[in-house]
Length: 184
Image (cartoon, rainbow, N blue to C red; front, side, top):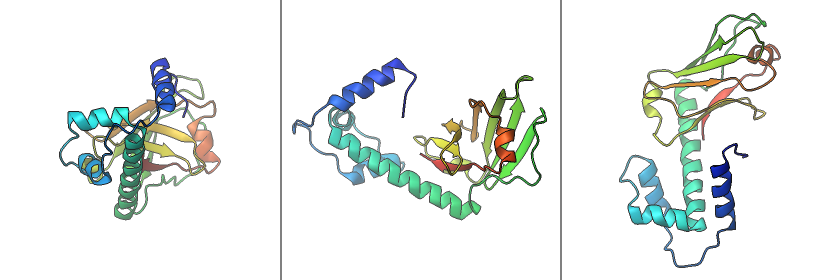
């Protein structure tokens, strides 16, 4: 993943060059699972060990990925999948568009007359919004990996962002590309 923020890039460089020196005790997987699943938060000592140990960060990221995958699968099971449904062929008309997904609503709002100027508003259904952990990042992406929208939903289960691609979302829908939600 590339970052536009220079501080993120600096932090990534520091972490990439960090070596495991053996002075930091490993944090067990079950402790990360507890903290990420609503149990007791990590202590200050555990947070420090996470920053100072590449092994602990690797374990944390593996646990988080496993929990994310499990939550995404549970959503799919509960909502019948989380793929966007488009009933009619989309056109490049510049008007608001509401697209229902399994467990969410995606609204496409034109921002100007330019074909690529859209704001996307993803709203989770009432049954799914409370199931999103505070650490979770939602990603609305096509199966090939193109990301439409990504971020943390607000307290109401909404996620808002501007379209960043040159090709409009309407054009992508017209070509049959259908994004789906995942927790990352």
